Image 1: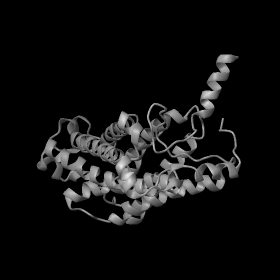
Image 2: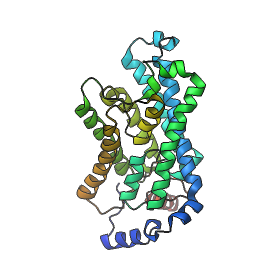
Image 3: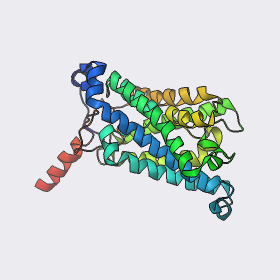
Image 4: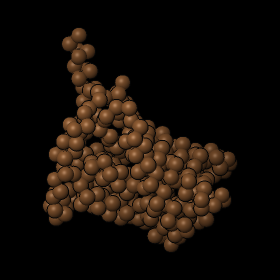
Length: 298
């Protein structure tokens, strides 16, 4: 069941009293929350290391796995499973629970649109993500060597349009970003499913790598594209990866705002932990806790 409908005025009051409305100075945010910015960088660096390792394992010509699995579709499926599992592990990791595991400037901008994060913190998150994305690829270069990462089959896991061109690539990026945000917002409205939101995101990543990657290389993340483009010095159609993911996620938010049947507080969180302080408080699990208490008392 969806959460109980709330009155718009009560909702506005809650937003106005939220941390986002307090608007501390950037220096105050930096002094208090700088570890979270670093966590975001570490999380995306981990994702990029995993992406590089599994891409090299499946695609580098001298890798045994390339010969064991001759179908490019199924090799991409293995990469997708690895990336989805990596995302889930990072989302539910201790530092992922602390920062919220955005790992994506488009996601952070979505939080900002919903007044779930302060502007100075959003800037800090995004800076951490861009630095972390590049650091992760450079770490993979140290681990695998330039010869492997620079090979045409791996190519620093850059994101470039597929054979169908830039328009299709942009549409593909917009669509997967829209689906990701729309799914997260929808799942978070169902208290019994909200604890599993990160798993839903991981499953979507598997599908996106498998079916959308041939269109655009699968980015959905400006910092992820930046992280690969810097060492590769490849900026082909970079505008796609800096516009489509952001617009797609914002579109997912606006669709929910327009067509939600009940007045709900939209929540884009990928994990929900009561054991960790967070910049993104929400009540996604409130009804679940009440339901459990009622069942014990019945």
